[in-house]
Image (cartoon, rainbow, N blue to C red; front, side, top):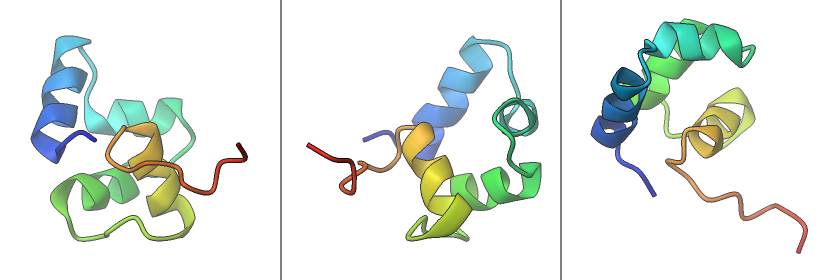
Length: 64
């Protein structure tokens, strides 16, 4: 699992902001910033999807 700092470093390395990543993946930039800032834990809904796609959370619901 990646930390928020690792995700930010990765986004910087590919030349994207968190807001641009959000728009590219159909999410609100505010939602992504809330996940990266720890204001939203990513337990359900879009926050959970964002955390999984950013590599901050494992998708345990995924079918085996």
